[in-house]
Length: 621
Image (cartoon, rainbow, N blue to C red; front, side):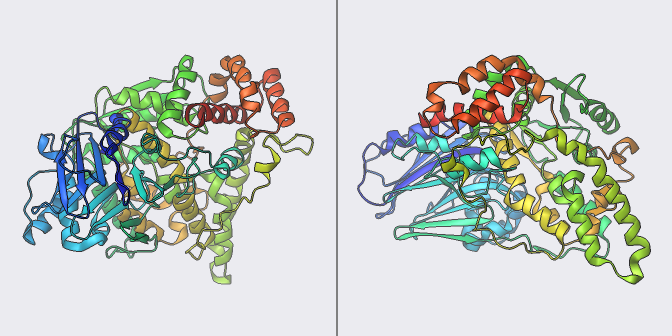
């Protein structure tokens, strides 16, 4: 796990680029506090200098940097960039290849020689053996950039689900990449301007991530599941994986047994580490399943959970139940709201975007606690979007899917499912009303200026849904295109802000491929979400966890944290500096601020306005 950065100046060499790459790498220190290394190359003449020095006898046109967080093979042999045997293929890498042991054995059988025990070195030899499509062989999370000396090309790759970030930009004939936007900005050459479409999505839509653009107008992401190949003459973006792929044969005739075997192996290989591994444990079905299966592989794991005393959705009792059942020590971390504004500033810096909800702030303090004892943490992220874990979100498309399968001969078992699901849908509607930021009313003025609010709201680049039923398409939309990418973005940024590697067993691509290939009613059946998972782990988990039906997402007492800072936030929102941006409609902003001052209403909307303004001040101004 590391932070990576680099640039390729394909014309007009600049002797100051060595200082530039050093600045870019320095901004990523938190991602890799243990070690660092550079590659400086003359691409045309195939000259390369690798090490910790930034002085050469030539002016480089290609510069790569790595900040290392040592997880596997803690020796200096793991310092990046890492080369192949003949020193003509180099890689800088952020992430973890969880099946590196199996791949190493396969590559050694093909005649490759290894110098280290790292998963990083597997990438260069895999590239030698299988070319850029080596990404298909990897099980893990990654953003890597390979420099191929002889072919004079950069091969940039991002994992199938975008767990690890890879930001890119072009300025004239110069190509830049980095693990964080701030590292690109540290090059001090790119124009800095807000992406106003992103700003509008941030303020008006459920999710603002689309996996490609960013909050900055001229900076983009390599899409998940893609390779970006950059040469002297241009670049091409090539998908190497799709959700409908089947990377291996899966036994669909025995779905529960297959699910159980795939999940257990996903947990097993994500425990590979030369440093302590911890677990984030909410007490839900997802993290509890990880706890039970991880405990079978290791006896040294400790768990951490966020607690909110007195809050109706505090889950600490379930976390305690899960930890006790698995025999894992549990650390309870209570969010300290007096650090609210301080945490907001820290989170904004590490996200490179304004945060949208209270989850980010809780996670900041939770991962801070984890970092005192562990460098790796397992999490249950990705399960809800895979297995229909949110009743209030997925019951309606489930009912449409069931309706499409109704036939005279199956009414006796389909109709009872639909009735129970319909009751569930009615029971979850009050929760939706509670989390709405403001009531919809024609008398409420718009909060955004007309120039932003009238923009087209749809993303015309999205491919049509690839599945035949409404529920699986809804899951695909959240997993691939919106909700999960946003959660992964802030999950990675905040964990790495504390130099902790987050690993996600539910995003093992084998498990994802298998589950998306299942019938929709294996994911949700009647009022039962995560149907196959509950059946597969029925003998592993306590009944109090298996029978939970109160899933509402990661709820927090957000309003209680915000209200003590009303004065500071209103001062910010009423400032001339904010008004002069032209982002917000003056009348609409005054209306919402006055309501917030009067009775604390519209907390989420006020938080987003404040976070957006703080982001403008930190990055744009």
